[in-house]
Image 1 (cartoon, rainbow, N blue to C red):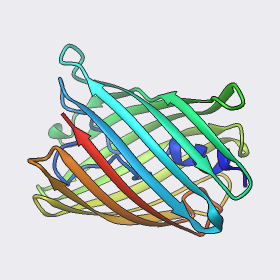
Image 2 (image 1 turned 180 degrees about the horizontal axis):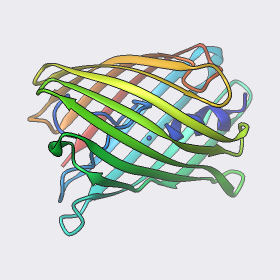
Image 3 (image 1 turned 90 degrees about the vertical axis):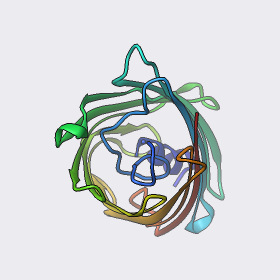
Length: 224
């Protein structure tokens, strides 16, 4: 599998307390960053067979457009045989806040391979968030993904459960699949420190790209 295939698929997968999706999670939630705030999500994933990914993704939500998060990303993926760097944009629109009992959003992305000089990835995902009390949330994703380096167009579906063990500690587990490859899963823990301004993630997964058996991810999100 080419490095672009590994890194590109993880990029297609695109806050507050520990109770929040994002970062290295594959399944997204419906929320956007708080109006007037910005964040930078960064994570490193190491997988079996010598593959890996480094990703940095800044995003901001303007007070004038409180439901629109404007984001981008820089990602470097590699295998033992090759390496590629992809940059892109990732705007996200919140159609309905989970404060109303059901959150709905639209998350999109386009990635450009700077080494090959071409569009490498694109996606449009509809995340739905269902809060159950103050400590439990369900996130459901469905949509379309495209990757030049892999096998073209795919339908993607995924589900995630988040549980706030404490105000500063959250647990997450998720399952997901697409048209090709094996279904994948991931689970992890998130610590939120510095009055909610920093998230620390540790995640372990299987078949994040549908082909690579194991992966470990460490992530940091800083918001201001």
